[in-house]
Image (tube, rainbow, N blue to C red; front, side, top):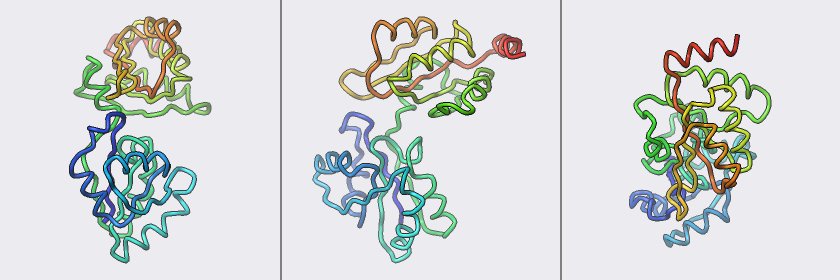
Length: 233
C-alpha cells in the first residue's frame, strides 16, 4: 500500500493520530528533504528508513518505489509540509500506482489553502485552486483567465514575490477586488489580512511579508466579468 500522509504546515499539534500510526508502521517513508522530515519524525519518535523523493528525482525513482510496493512493502509519502500532490511531489507516483493496480490511500490532513480560504471571509462555496502561477511564460494568460472566473481564486506565492503578485492582481482583476493574504498559517505569527488588493499592496510595501503565503482572491461577479472583458479587448 502507498500511503499519502499529510504533515503539519506549521503547528506540530496538527499531526493526526492516524498519520503518526501509519508512519510508525510503514516500511519506508518517502520525503522531499530528509533533514526537514527528520525533525518532524524525531518529534514523534518515529524511526523508519527515509528515501528522498522530490521534484528533481521523482521520474527516476518511480520504478524502484513501485517495485517495492509490488513486493508487498508499505510505503508512506510525505512532503515538507501539507498534503503531497498539492503543489508538491506526489501526483506522478500516485498515477503510476493506479496504472499498475497498486493500492493507494490518502489520509485526511493539513493543507495550507483550506484554512486560508475559510478564514478569508470570502465565499468558500465555489473556488478555483491555481497554486503557483507560472514565473514567466503563460503568466499573463493565466491571470487574464483567473480574473474572469466567478469563483474565489486561490494562489500560492513566496514572500519575495508577493508584492509583484498583488500588483498583477490589481492590474488584471481590478484595484477594488478583495484579497486575503494569509501567512504563517498555524504558526505563532499567523495572519489573515483581507483588504481590497490595492490596500493589501500598500500594507505589504510598508510591512514586508514573511513566511509562506496563500493569496485568496474574490471572484468576479457579472459586472466584474463584463469589466474584465472590456479591459482585455
